[in-house]
Every structure is written in structure tokens, then in C-alpha cells.
Amino acid sequence: DQQVKQNSPSLSVQEGRISILNCDYTNSMFDYFLWYKKYPAEGPTFLISISSIKDKNEDGRFTVFLNKSAKHLSLHIVPSQPGDSAVYFCAAGQAGTALIFGKGTTLSVSS
Amino acid sequence: GAGVSQSPSNKVTEKGKDVELRCDPISGHTALYWYRQRLGQGLEFLIYFQGNSAPDKSGLPSDRFSAERTGESVSTLTIQRTQQEDSAVYLCASSPRLTGTDTQYFGPGTRLTVL
Image (cartoon, rainbow over all chains, first blue to last red):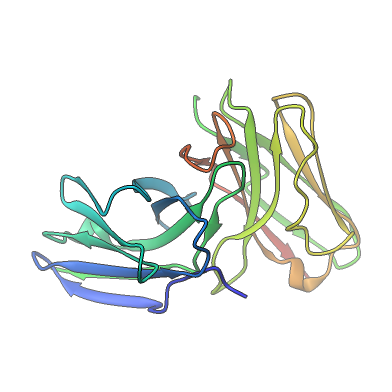
């Protein structure tokens, strides 16, 4: 049973537009959420995170929103750039446990 | 370098053979994790080590899988009697400590192909 779900395996966006990647989770004990980005033949790299006491965290073009009541988080990238094309993984965790990752969403940004 | 390194980068083996995958974490990181990613799938947690505590092996898919870590240094993941379904990219990550809030830093992975 997947505790972290990314229901869209892929997303295509035009350069300059907004990319919205979604993630749902089932475990209400999760208190920390992260997004990782992965290019082919490389390991995932950390992108942005949010703790459960916040509902928004922004870092440049990247913003993560958390809706605890809906057990949903999203990553917004604006404006999207071709270099953003990658697989994006949502992950969730709580103190003392390993992170649980979603299956990933492949983002393609066309110029 | 200062990042997580893994070796080999690619491994092709025959069904039934044993393989060993190596991970060198970032110096000073007490927590170390192994994941695998099969084709078209997400990151699947396998095992984590936290300092001298007993490792959490809850993600290991079968008793053919085992992992060791010496102190806070190198870890090896061993797969005995490999099967074709073991083919995947095996990723290692480390973090300063296991809190669920620390960023994990990933290595480039080992691509294992079982023929």
C-alpha cells in the first residue's frame, strides 16, 4: 500500500508557463515533506522541503504548498525552463524513520 | 569528492550469482540508506543504518538481500543468488542523522542487470 502517491506519471509544459506537480499521502504522522529532482543516470538531488507546521515554502522559482487536511502537497515551478525537465519525486517522513518516496513524475518543458 | 559515491556504476551478472554493491557516504554522516529503483517504478526503500543502532531492514525484499556498514563509513549491499527481478538501479544516500527532517544526499547509483 503506497503511503506517498504521485498519480501523474508525466507532465508536459511550455517554457515560461507554470508547472504543478502533485503528491498525496496517507500517513497523518508524516511531519516533513521533500521534493527531489532526478536527471537520467544521476542520483536524486534535493530541491525543496516543507515541515508540517507550514503550508507554504518558497525558494526562487520553486514553491511547495502543503494542505494537511487533504493530505496533499504540490510543487509549483514558475516560470518553467527546459532545464527543469527531469523526474520529480515527492517524499515524506517523520522523526526517526526513513523517507517514503512516491513513484515520480516526469516533467518535460518544451521551448 | 565530497559527495556520496557508489561502485560499480554498472554491473551485469548472470542469474544465480552473488553481487556486492558499495557505498561511500559523505564523511560525518551518521545515517545511510539503500534504495532501489526498478524500471518504471519509484524509489523503493531497502534498509537504513543510523550510527551504532540496529539497522532497519524492513524494506529488504527477501533474505537474499543483506547489507553491512562498518561504523559510520562504507556500506555494502549484497544480493545472493540474483534473479532477473533484481535488475534495478540501486541508490545509496546519506544524511547527517536520521530524523526524517535531514536532507538525504544521493549517490549516482549502481545499475544492476541480471541476465
